[in-house]
Length: 93
Image (cartoon, rainbow, N blue to C red; front, top):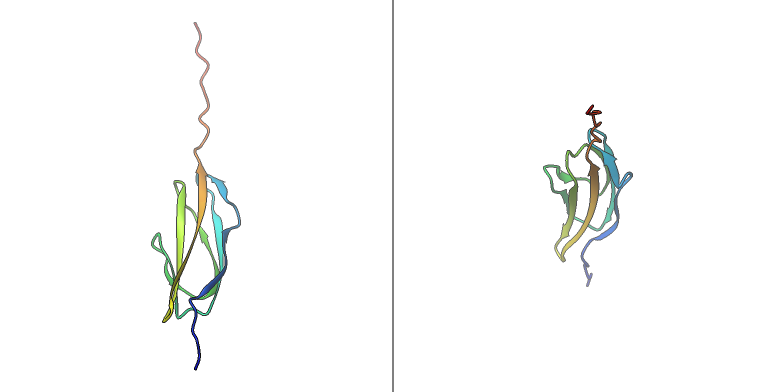
């Protein structure tokens, strides 16, 4: 008799946890023992090991869900997007 356990997410990170508006970061993940792996935010189904360049416009939390017959395992990672610095114009009085 084989006992199946829920998938293991070995890592789910962003190479840059904070970026400036307009820049990109790369999501990196590894999953063992999953029949399906999906990332939200419009990414969808993916392989158990991979990376993907993303360019969020606002601070975004990505959720990876790994599933098999024993259940699901979830991990999240957040990329913080810094707003562009606006230059102040000198005001003459």
